[in-house]
Image 1 (cartoon, rainbow over the protein chains, first blue to last red):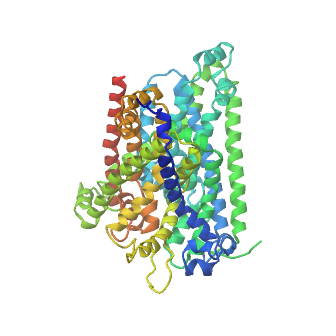
Image 2: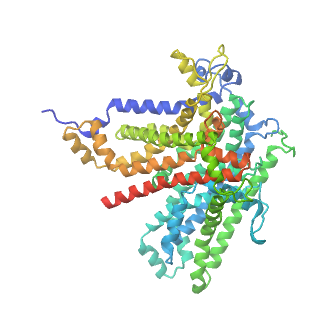
Image 3: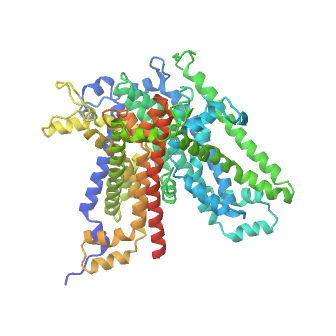
Length: 301
Length: 336
């Protein structure tokens, strides 16, 4: 009788591997086509398909120079939106993670009535589509909140600045962040927390001396998650930016370029690649953390 | 440095960028300073004060933001869905009647249904097969990275990438720029105007979402497969099961719970798809979906009643998916 093959050998069959490689290539071709196009001269891009690059390999960075630094009409150049994305994203990552870590700490280690209920509600809030909150939240930013003339939240006059976008992203990021960080903080050994308490550390020093240093991996995972989410977001930037170019992220500008005729492929391909470069670097450099966050996470609201 | 004027203010880009970066730094410094100060003061407070202060510092900020930013707006939107376009009068269920009777909106609902049906199933299936093929493969990391890569790209970026793939050249004497047109010509078929042709166009947009979500499904399922004990698979093989049968009868049942999580996560993401449709067709040519129509009704037509009703429909669609997910998880737990 022929000895049955080991499972490992069967699975690493050359056919399956070849098929996987082919799929990977097919998956990459669209992005590759965009990248190749972005470095072809305008003349070439608009006269034949990008695959002809390999027959007539003319390389230029003019498309990048033009889309980044030359504005079109009343539209500022992309470099402005690049920095807008940066100024928009950093606080929109740092604020929710800080507040979520605080709340997760409280939910994981404080003893108080209704703790489980509060955690369940926060967990449940993950499913609320952010579409449901857009108009009322926008009105809060624009007009404040008052009931029968009694002002609860005043009109802050922050429309058209980064502040509403930061706050909106913070709010939308909180439920998932609290959930993930809570699961992580729960795993800190009870003895460690109790030893700290016995040594006379109060809840505040306990947080900064023990909990915070231990949470660094979890913070890293979620930061990448939130970073990619905010950097790539269109809806929040579009609605909470108040239609002001001074605070609009790159996604808003690129979407606008696609929509209006007159932005040729040479500018669109280069522009799209500029908007992708930062997430791609983050992705390749920190893929392991990203995957870890992905596996720990459930449903993003 | 380039000085190209724009807008009414005639500012150069750098005249906007520098103040913005300055504001960014100031904001981060202020935020850090506040937290530092709060901690400094709080940790010196008396034990009695700290007992309530710890809630104020740690729990109240996030909870307050969630109440103001998620709970209140959700309730308000539900209320607005029963009111007229500028939320000044109650109109009963008029907006919902509108949603389910206007032919244009019925197409929107139908398209959303197609999206939510096709995207999760195809992405999960593809992700499952690829995860299985690469499970024991050498240098699988490179292959997986490439398939996972679209997850890092924005929907807007993906929209541009695929709009280029679907580019249509109406002038027959000119060469094709789009990959699809060129490929279909090379096999002797006259390419259609891809993104204008319904219902083909909806499926072409769906391809973009599948392209993005397959990597997610693959990564999560692949991690689950790593937890399937080697002996179980080998035992099945020793019993004479083929690779395919082992996959269907052993591997899939063992990672069932993860498959459900992947399916439901992708379903929810798909329900809210907005950027792809907006970027690629603007919701025209019968490709519109709920999330995009909700945006148009709210911010173009300025009809908050219609927009809110569509948003509520979105939430109502999410609930059964989550309920199913939770039920499956419960079954999974009781079985163990």
